[in-house]
Length: 362
Length: 187
Image (cartoon, rainbow over all chains, first blue to last red; front, side, top):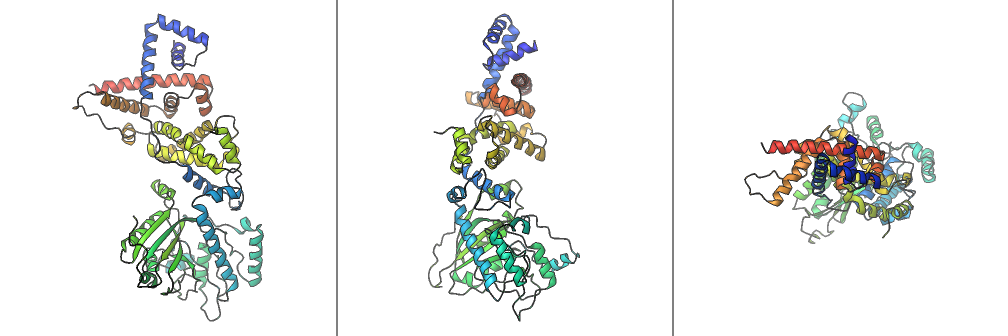
């Protein structure tokens, strides 16, 4: 009887061979129980087919391709950016077709290249910069290095690329050779698309105080490659905002630091500050733009952007071009990961000129 | 219009827009199936996205023994199973109702075809939620996704004979659970 029942199901689905179908039709004609079963299962199928149909309210194509791109790059640090991506994709197609990716990648490459050039060319060698989230209590860094405090866990940063992953690249090998010749740390290598994160301070210029050994050790332990840029936030601000260093102060109040993409960095002078912390050159009235690379979690970004928007007097417009998947990851509880964002603060060079736009973008 | 095989070929040759077309073509079908199988719109959305990402990354390994959607569905179900194991063991009936957005029946309202249909949908979804994921999936694939036994066998990687018997078993279970729900609601 069980087999007969099973054939009733298959009969309803039209999945029987002609001979089986004929047999079932005969059974149905002879058996009220089987007819009842047939009717029950038929009604059940109708109920299931009447369930609402769900569909997504947007096309996932762009998000999928961006995530896949990052997944490929993240999974395989040996894979060159200009090389194969995903399923044997030539560099030109995906990189040139990606809507937002190219806009962000090339400026980041240019910034990184400029900084590397500055390092090798300048007599005043910049000490290492911290582009990751750093605790406000800088003293705790030294304490951690001495084992007297709980270690700061920053598993939001990607694992540091080792020399081995980059050693076979000709350009990297050349940089390594120059470093070794100058007595610097050959680990001071950077991924071309990321911010420069040297692992040890080269010798400071004569007359400048040497960074403490604790700071250097702390800097070395924390120096990690930064992620590729995840978004650009453009802020139209008043000249006073730039002149007063308000963005740096805001970052400090939120326990965040940033690398200044322009202009060049100065050596940190205070022993209380870690060697990695950036000392921003004082903005002047002549400068109409200041750019920062900030590494932050979604929660930090939300607080930072909210604070910027609150300061309606000095911050006239905030254009937030972050990718949405960060928000999705935050919703899934994966918001601990730190990402890199570029903040561009723009102000009219002339303090008397009206700001470009007085409307705050939500 | 190119078929899936041609789009896959184009994508493996570097045409990411071709993969974008595959996403656009299949995302709603996969999403609709997953919503009913996993009982959560949010989980389904996550799994759909993750599945497409994984499919793109591993497109070189797609052997074309089955159709692209079959392969994609298997990726999605594996991800859904992993996700459920990490999150919670079962989906409650109330959660299904809440997630899928059906309003409880207002018994004071006059009988109405639309209300009856909504009520029936609630009952069916509640009954589905009590089945195992295997039984739920096979019912959804057959009745909602409209897949043939052969296609279901490929998606679930099972013999057709097993599909037939499991589907029948799932139908009987659902019928019995629905009878119980109807009896509870008429008390």
